[in-house]
Image 1 (tube, helix red, strand yellow):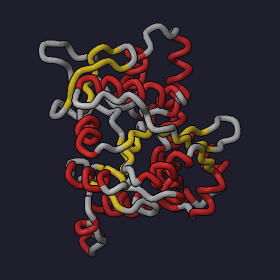
Image 2 (cartoon, one colour):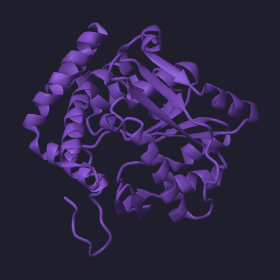
Image 3 (cartoon, helix red, strand yellow):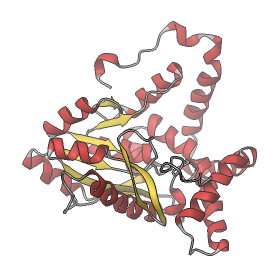
Image 4 (cartoon, helix red, strand yellow):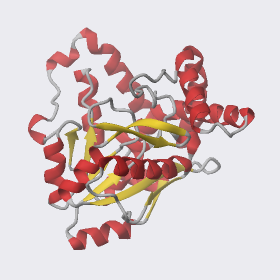
Length: 308
């Protein structure tokens, strides 16, 4: 999304139909003012309460873990599921931290490693496709990175215009701008001119521009071929990064990896499989902090039964 169509707050967003959204955003702001230790405590307990009301989501988490880690014991998967539920509740607070915390407070709680890789790419004038996964704290990671080096975030505009306004404002606090995920030309322009573009190719985005390649133990996971398109057309660097919260201290570490080598150019299937290996490594940096509640394997090859 370009700045020309940046969402603006109008009187129409004060309509009663948006009062629930305004209340939610107000709650997120208020909670972000609490001491960090209190946010951690509340987040975990809210996650446990919410998942009891969302049995379907709990089933999705369980099924995803079962599909990806068939050799993991049932007790290990159950333990991972419980940790993931706690982190799901924390996501509300971590989003509030990303949107409302001051730069100083963010920097106090997040350590960044590997920034030298960004500085080298800057000297070379080379664009970077920042490959992320949907960890629960991704919003906070992007905010922390943007304080040091601005970039352009890829996002899907929310169907609720009121929430979309606050989402855009929060995500663009330390990013140069946001790009609609359908605006491929906008992404290419940014990459070709040496910009950094945030990109998360780990979800199932549908059958268009996709292929079926392995992800963990699932042999045919619907995976976007958009990564191949962007890298081949712009000759940008592919830079993975992870955001991990230490369970003991609560401190976050954002790790920027060196640009990957051996990316399969001009071969979208091989590139998708290559990227899924990066996705696996990123998820395994903190598997309990990943968004397992997404129906990652919802689309199947023709004639194949549903995995859910």
